[in-house]
Length: 355
Image (tube, rainbow, N blue to C red; front, side):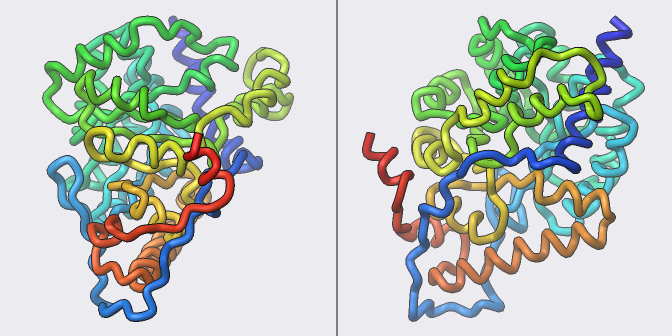
């Protein structure tokens, strides 16, 4: 058991270092196929654009959501501390990375609990894998939530990543039932989230029926966990013996592009978080126009967070400024009116939506 705990924590550090040092983005999320309609007479004041939004009963100052990315190794604590401080200062929401390592080893809990210490009033989302939920049930879900005093719990689906990990969880049976059991009796909202392969309309409907209160589409076109796992096989990053990277490479193109997934899921049930390849405020505006309630961003904030609070502040502010200008030029005074605007849909996205 101790060896398993150490492997989980070491894997978290592997992931962090690879995301910082290597190119792990793959594919096209589809935002280049979306063009917002320019309003030559916007009839609003750029200085008074309102970005405040409602999500699961919480009022957030912006649709920007810091998506879960790290935790579970001692060296990740300061990253989460910096992310949480910015979250608190800007009145936005934040998710933590998978809490499995800390659930297996209580000594690592502070790498996650630090976010609540730094952001006592923020909207925080805990994070547990659907396989761990199935295998450990309500106990682990409750512990994950208590660890950061979370306002919602994300149950992540990452079967592509698990499939290319020889040490991964390869049995997906019983997971939907586990989600339904959790949702039927849980004290805070449950968010079902993908981690880079997208969610289809059909899967979304199953999640709503199971009782999910929100869906994070986690689409293809940003961070590729197949690519990350492939890079873990290299001598300078590997902490153990892993299968040949060819399997990971073959599946770097697997998944539903973020924009397609968002368009499929929006309108099928409750609120939607668009995550996967959002790299600036214009992408955020496009996602909102397509039906997103929040826009999850992870990788663009990782390096700035490592460099310190001042650099992260600059990056977050740039996203805000870009979003507000895009809203102004669309004639949208707030996220609600932006969501009512019609976008132009071109290219591969338009072709895929016709199928």
